[in-house]
Length: 243
Image (tube, rainbow, N blue to C red; front, side, top):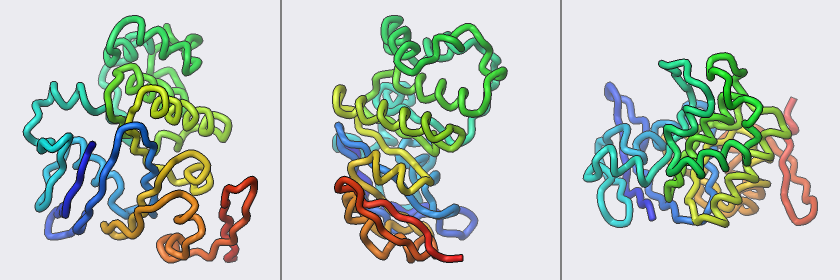
């Protein structure tokens, strides 16, 4: 389990994360939601050890994340950043293989994500959505106990978004992977994750089940919108009603 306790992150006297505590368990898919500037990416980068907190702690199975070497963290955590900088224009198959636990895992991931048609193409020749699928594939091929993805659905169309979330859910169910994913599309999150962390202005406003968050007035307050709720097959969907 990954545990965050009383986390605070400051930069140039600005508070980016303010007294956040949460946990991420293996086998669950957790959505991290909030408006732009809420602190989602900063929280994720701190949890994977890419940023040092000002106060508080992040631990994996009781051991501080800072106590793990970079190699040890790579065996435990996969991180798909919001923005990708491709320093080397490698072929897709090579990029997947670099992060893969084994050649077999690499091949299976390419097939499962429908990347076979891109396997011999250079990463910089792909569209933003195709590149996003490749980077998710690289993270999945690593077979780590925990996977962090920062807005992986941003460049995907609706069909691809839903397919990607189904893959992440299957990864959690079948392999026990703990998944934390930043999403902006509320209804995609409500349909795809087990639990939601709702952030605003660096603080964790709500940590609850998808249905609790969907039905709560907190999302109206956080996003500054009035939402109408509709229940379809036991799932609550939200739609902004303001002009």
